Length: 371
Image (cartoon, rainbow, N blue to C red):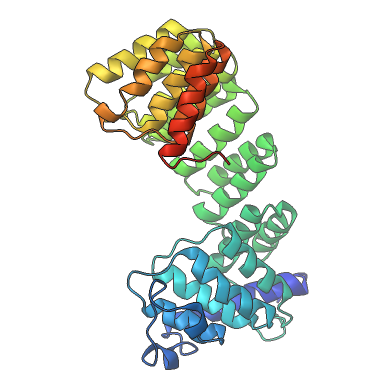
């Protein structure tokens, strides 16, 4: 067995794999507590909650509805501080099976635990598999530790473990996050060479990476490749490309892509379209698009209205913006802080101080306070 893997990396893989197996056997670490406690975040006061973080975690799992990820992070963090790393990873997996979506904070807790585990999987003849490496690569990339992700990917290949589409996607995402889009594209080519078929996530990740660096020509090549590979381009694909063309000052091309969409546009699509047209000096076109949206009977949200109020105020159409603001309630939409502050800013730009002051007072009356 090769022994080039570092102690920290080896420990990560070993523990992750061990606890995945433990979880599959029913996770006996937490089982003794399940039938002894009940937990509800809304009804159990802080003073009555058990001080033992493991017991607290088990109470939370029994609660219905389940507490938020923020609540779950507290006992995980406490267990990590007491160096119960194996237990943290096992509980982390337990949350995943319950459908609790992890956030960056919980990922960081587990990554730190993995890094601090000291037992060497090689010494104990525990061999990591593709699931182990993929999970670690993905977590390292999301944490921003691309160097660690690259080492893991290299070690994976050295051990003749064939990366799957999830492992490749994690590496491609990490490279794009760090601006290394050409290397990310090369990773796609390696992927294809190794007969691992890219999916919609692979291409959307690459397209987003190239768009951020205004390389729309490369984006369109990827866009064409998707069709050649039989992949159905989704709304995310189109949103990213439309925004990319607006960012490089090609509003007509962006509109052309919008008109050719073979997936239904979302409100996010329209947000990109409206802002893109405005930022490229196409105010009148943005107004026409908004009017078409209203006529179509679309269920518009406060974000769309806020965008239009902003565009109208910036373009000098403050009276029209005010009319739109006043129509929000009639359209079943409650104005938020952004609605108020945008309209107040519009009044101030036109030196309509009295109107701005009155709206400011109304915002406070409605319970929307400026931060």
